[in-house]
Image (cartoon, rainbow, N blue to C red; front, side, top):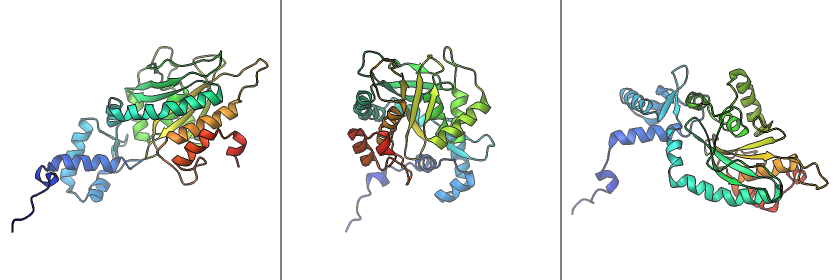
Length: 285
């Protein structure tokens, strides 16, 4: 009796490629990276072969070393490649209906931005329903340092990822200069709060409200921002607190990462609550 034919997976094995993919998949689950010894132990591989593979991944910019040189983490190269791939289109397709419902209920515009080659790219945008409003142009490249979107996406990265992003950063027209100490303090506060309220540094009278869209490892894959404008006539529009609650629900519905005690619950619950337009009072119960 003949032995079973080998499967295609066994017939077309590429051990070197498997090692590289094993490393990438392992690091994708680590917020703070791993040492070479930890990687070697986790994968049960030979130390010398892990060293060679890591050196090639660093050289090709798929993996970055920590500033001290002792830890490895994923770079944003795979993420940047994904921008040119249908998964990003699926995110946009899923986000647009939720963004539209937010805009209708909050009576404000909103936009979705993702990291791209040192700055942020606006990948989706929805106008508010009213006569007056402000919006950011679809496809615009906006600053990484002085925008709400930029600070939030930086805040929800590992230290190594943030260093890599800042190293790639190039100032856009009008962007404020980098103040490392002020930015680090801002990142800590944003992580503690889970979002950002900040006066716009581009337009007078606008409050930026920004929430992260979190990937499976808890790092921000995009940011959802509302450039909030306050009405001063007799019309009573949703307050900034109400708008922030709705935006937070929208971002939670689009996120893939959940802490056990996250207020918005799991993804399905977040979507249901958002679609019912839960207000601030109910969100606090």
